[in-house]
Image 1 (cartoon, rainbow, N blue to C red):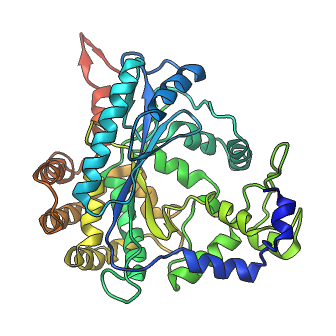
Image 2: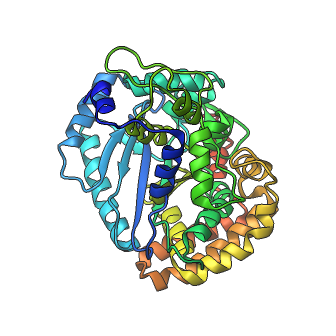
Amino acid sequence: MSEADRTALGDLVTDVAAEDLVQGICFKTGPPSAVGVELEWIVHEPHRPRLPLPPERLDAAYAALRALPLRSALTVEPGGQLELSSPPAATLTECVSAMRADLTAVRSSLTAHGLVLTGHGTDPWRPPRRVLRQPRYDALEESLDRAGPAGRCMMCSSASVQVCLDAGHEEPGPLGYARRWHLAHRLGPVLVAAFANSPMLGGRPTGWRSTRQLLWERIDAGRSGAPALDGEPRAAWARHVLDAPVMCVRTDSGPWQVPDGLTFREWARTGLPRPPTRSDLDYHLTTLFPPVRPRGHLELRMIDAQSGEDGWLVPLAVTAALFDDPQAAETVYRTLKPLAERAGPLPAPHNPLWRDAARLGLADPQLREAAAHCFDVALDALPRLGAAHDVRRAVAEFAHRHVARGRCPADDVLDLLQKPVHGRTVRS
């Protein structure tokens, strides 16, 4: 349907109506009963990870993947990263089982094309290179370029584990939507630090454990920042959405317009360059990338992609346990309050706490202590959620190997760079 058709049907929105619409859809409340995960992966040749992959080769491999009977949705990121998004699962065990099955099928198909999946928060080897040419990504690139090169790196060289959880009850309490919203932001820097796994970019160490999080911090705060947390969550998010910059004004033909500094509120009030529609509002919501995004459910976006075949299930299990077990949620919420106060007035991820989490990982003593407590609480809660033994074992092993030692996966990567091989030091 063309824009003219939508306008004729009375689909235009005012700023007041837009704010009401956002408040009505951002938190869908009810008993937490579903969990999901979205996994992004770096794709490369197994023994030549520095080699850029021709777009036609990726196209052929991804065409084969789309023919598979997957339960997860399969999408491709601008730099060729692969994303699998699970459907909502009734239990953590069901979510893990379904994603494992899909990953087995995906890996087998990619192997036939001479490719593998690797879990890194940023591509350690190759410079950013966009392989998707679509109006959305043309507009996003132009918009992000105004703040510097971080946006292109984020688009083309980053990968994450995104955990999706129900918003929670309407009523107050440890499983209430307002409490879960605040818990997500309190827990966020701990998840950044514990699972930091991107110390390299373009073949070199950056000095940050989570370079991926650094990239988000350097993107325009209106697009990557969290809303203020000192008010009612629905109203705060709705105001944030309307006061955020518009990434693009879509057109039926030709390149999309990319306004500079135009907020959705201003667009709705002025009607320029054309009046916005409900469809424009819905699209605008997809162009905002805060660490926690309310999409009816909560989408936690701050975790780096993890190494290994099953590395992703540890952040999924820990996060689900700390949110969906009432006892764990209450304990962690109260425990993390002093740490949250260290963030100061700036929204995540543009404040000192989130910056320290990305730069230092668990070398920061306070973040290490908080992470150790969170893992202990999660391990206690996982049996109550019915988590399988292998999932609990994976969490316990990660806690022993990393958290208890004040380390994160990025430290393992950096250790490999210093490992002598035949009398010389490996640098990449």
